[in-house]
Image 1: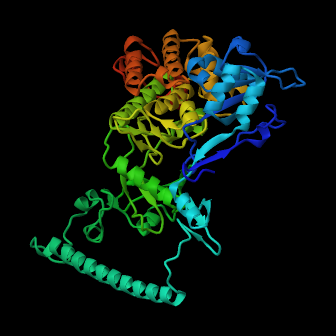
Image 2 (image 1 turned 180 degrees about the horizontal axis):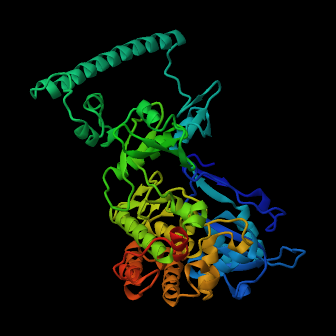
Image 3 (image 1 turned 90 degrees about the horizontal axis):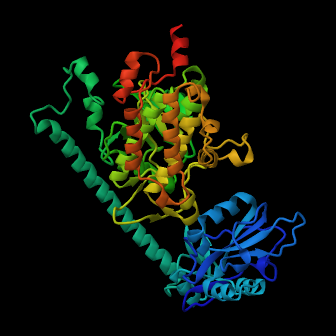
Length: 575
C-alpha cells in the first residue's frame, strides 16, 4: 500500500505460477469503494472451449492459446481487452463455445511487455506483478491517526477502526474529558430540542392561519359549506374537508395511509408483485379505480425509487404512459403510490399467462402494441429519461388493449451532453443490455436492447428467460439472434398467429423480426435509436394490407388501428 499515491497493489494468488487453476473463478470487487487505477486493465481467460477461434493464435498479440492439459482435449485461451473492440466476432464465438470465463485484473504496463514477448512465462510474470486499486483520501487521515481502514456495508462507506471503537474518518480525539463531553452533549441536546419545538410551534401557527385564510379571507366560513351537490362532489378528487387537511408533496395529490388501506380493503386485493413492491386493486371514495403500489420496505433505496417515480411521472404526460394520481408522504407509515387502474393486466399476462389461452392477441394487435410501446420510449428518450427496466410485465394493456408503460423506479435522467451514465447494472435478467452489464455504461440504447427482447416475445409468444428450453435457447435474446440471423424466423415465430398460412402476416412478422435483430446487437452503435424503431414499425402497416377477419377490419389496419384479438378467439367468443 502506498499512502502518498493512495494506491493498493493486489494479485490473484490462484494465478501465480499457474495460468490454469483447478476451479477458475471471478473475484468480486466493489469498484465504488476501491476503483481500479488507470494502470489496470482486464485480461480474460476462456477455459475448456469446444471450438478454436478462427484466427492464428500463435501470431496474434491479443489472443494466445494456453497449455492447460485438459483431459477432454478442449483448448483454453488468454484474450487481451483490445480484442473486444477489434474482433467482436471472435469474442462472441469464444463466449458461446467455452465452458468457463474469468476476468483477471492485470497491470497494463506489465501486459505490454508480455504482448511483445508473446510467451506464457511473460504472462505469468505480469499476473504476479498484480494490479492496482485506488483508495479514498479518508483512509489516509485514518492511517495518520494510527487507525486501520475498513468498509462498512451498513454505512455504505469507509470507516476508521480504532483501538476501542470505529469512527467515520479518523481516530483523533478533541482532548476533552468524558464528563466534559457528556455536559456539552446535554447542553447541545437541550438547545436543539428547544429550537425544534419552537420551529414546530411556528409551523403549526402559520399553517392554521393559512388554512383559515382559505375560507375567511375569501368570504367563506371557516367550516366548508354543506350545500355541495352530490354530482359536483363526485367530480372532485376528494372532499373539501379532506383537501383542507391535505398538503401537496412532490407536486402530486397526497393520500393518507388510512384512506388507501380502506380503498384496498386492507391490502387484500393483490394484482401482482415485483422485486421491490406489491400492487393492489382499490377504489377511492370518489369512485376512481386505482392500482396502489406498496413497497416492501422503507429503506433509503426504496425512498429514492419512490421519489424517482414521482419526479418522472408528475412532469410527463403521454397517452401511453401510466398516470400517477398521487402518493403518501415519505414520512407515512408505508410508501404507497397511487396509479390509474389498467384493466387488462400486463403484456406478459396476455402473452404467457391464462389470458394468452382464453383471449390470445392477434398479430396486428401485437404490432399495434409494439408501435405504442416504442412511441412511449421514444418520448421518454426525447425528455432525457432512460426507463432501464423495459419488459413485458411493465407494459400494461387497458380495456381497449392500448399500451400504458409503467414502473419508473429504476429510471434515470440522462443529460443530453453525455454519451453515457456510469452506474451499476440494474434491471431484469433476460432484458439487460449486455454492454451495460459488462461496462457499467448506461444510455438510451440500453432501452433499445430491452425493447428488442419485447419484440421477440411478441413474435414468438415465448418468455424472455425459460430454463425449460435447451441450454442455448434459455435466453430468448440469444435464441432470436440465432434464428433470425440464420434466416429461420419460422422456428422462432408463433405459428398460430398466421405466419405460415397468411403471406401478409408472414411479411410483417419477418420485418419486425429483422428490426428485433437490429435492436439485439451486442454493440450499441449497431442498434437503431427509438425514433428509428418507431419509424420502421409505423411503416409496416402502411405497406402491408391484412384481411384479419373482414373487409372492415382490413380497412382499419390500413389506417394503423389493427384489431386486437386473434381470429380464433373472436370466433370462439361469438359462438
